Length: 227
Image: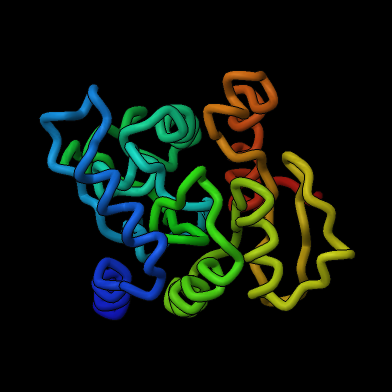
């Protein structure tokens, strides 16, 4: 746990990507009208959750007015509202809402991280920015020794994890709810559409679809299914 805490402090202090740092600071200064009374976090957002977690949830990056505002992954925006409701229903979160870093939410047997820890313009981190952030995720995976299932939210998170795991991308096709066995000793990977507002508002990702994904993760952890 101590080494994870040290790693998160390193993430928060990171200045490796000038474009992303400038963007996060600018958003924190200008703010959104609805949040004018908030003091935005405006720094790289650390991962959080249960250090003994068997489930790892890998997202893309913090939202400009969500995690970049609140300082906690998937907290304070519609993506988080969608995700935490499902995590609560499947027993991975202590409450169905996540509005601020101090709202009492706990993850249960789960840990949330991201492919990039800074909010990117237009939600699109550059390839080199993802590469600079990747060592943090690699170290995290080494420290989270109990992980048995990884849920990758979105194609970038999916590709990032496949690359770190050393798996051939051609052998694993991204699709919502697809279960990927990557080899002996590696966690099972489940690919999922990202709970972005674009996906949820258009019906590309529904609450039932995301619920089924995390129920599949729950079943895998209980060894009740053999995909």
